Length: 443
Ligand code: NAI
Image 1: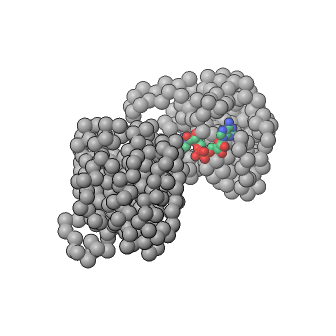
Image 2 (image 1 turned 180 degrees about the vertical axis):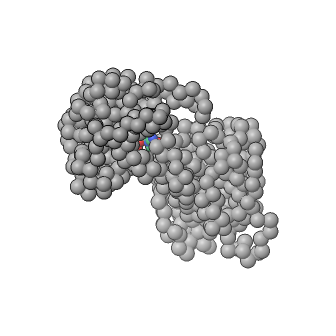
Image 3 (image 1 turned 90 degrees about the horizontal axis):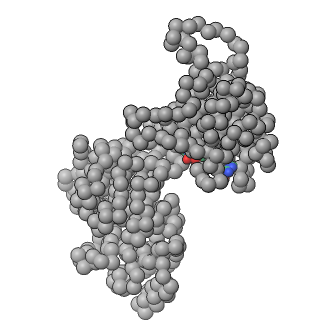
């Protein structure tokens, strides 16, 4: 395992003063150890980044004055991570590191963790919520990468490039325009007009395609795209159909044999969404019967767990079918965007308390505090906590300059901007509120 310590060895006092994030952090159970803390220089915020998180994240942390960063190339086992996480304030992982309940229990100082990827199955979210640890991820940073690939695949399939390519590799010269078309002027039917679908729409129009889309939610058309109210209508009229819906009970087998049959004869089907949205046995049948001219599939119901594990699909060996190993969003640019996106969310949570995009702490988008100290209080969501907090603050005759509250089923997040004179007494009072999970103060 290769480790790179990017921390600075020594810092002069002026720099430290400038870089104070002014943070006191305590979980309810280990207050006493932190009792004497008054503020936290950024130099003392320990950041551990695993699995080769993109350098764009490290750069951003440096730019914001955080230098105690350790970046590890691979993932850590549960036990290694339990040992390493004790003094860590911010953690970055990707998809391989398991952030289990037992790891989170050892993470007494952890304020937030960033999953520098799309999914968060690797995080025990229930434990993160119970510990008031903010979990962030980056669900949309690879949108453009997926959209570009859809355009590329559309052109490749319309020109029958998979067959030409294979023939050329085998030493055959198959020069004919038979069955090969431009995409300009053709109709692209987009199912699911969310982040990716709408981006595909813009790119497709820019190369002269006519775009129609179907979505279960009301969506504003971009450019000249036309919304179609009935899915069957889209299937009947599109030369290329591309799927961009989420994986839900409603979208499972959305494109079954019956639906794919409703597509125009000689049309193309592209699935870069989820494996079980389109039935691969049905695609096989309709490619072999020449109802479909071609297909591109990037996602499969049963995907290998690791590189080099065997991959089996009933679409293998078919003409004009492109199969790719779930790489729609896998580009260097997407990794860089993910690095910036997640690091920005972590820094914002640390420095302002904003939890926008968090999957565990209720989402609050907060203004920068002005002439006040900010109290951040995470507590179990049971009746009476807010009135207890307000009662305590009013007993202290605190001047409250701003108050924000958001709750989810399990926890509540209260942020109070308070006059500087009262803040230290308020902090002590907030620590003693029943059902407190974490309290922080920002200067
Ligand atoms: P999104 O949540 O922004 O958009 C999904 C859209 O589908 C929404 O507008 C929603 O209203 C619509 N929708 C939901 N159910 C529908 C239905 N039954 N019929 C029609 N529309 C429906 O999601 P985003 O970011 O655009 O992602 C789309 C898909 O792409 C997801 O399944 C995601 O997992 C997948 N994806 C695949 C990648 C790859 O590497 N191949 C990379 C990134 C995302």
